[in-house]
Length: 121
Image 1 (cartoon, rainbow, N blue to C red):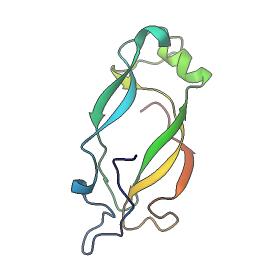
Image 2: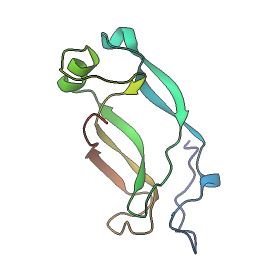
Image 3: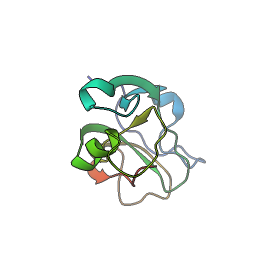
């Protein structure tokens, strides 16, 4: 049973289509604590639920995510880049839209979506 509840309409007079009181304050994330082998450095930890930062943002409750070869190489320190830890890996995802800014017209709350996050930020 989902703790997110059923999708709701946009809140009148705001740019967010789900109020913070309707959303959980924490979620779980797969996080690496340092460079190393995934089975040694990855763990599931509670993190703050992201906030809608602009009218064009949306929040997806991820149901599936992938770790690709580039994730494993970056996690192992085999790529020429410096990273801050702890950090999440896995940029491909599939899930459900649970919150969105008022200017997001292509998707509605409850839509099943898939996508790819932007690079190693």
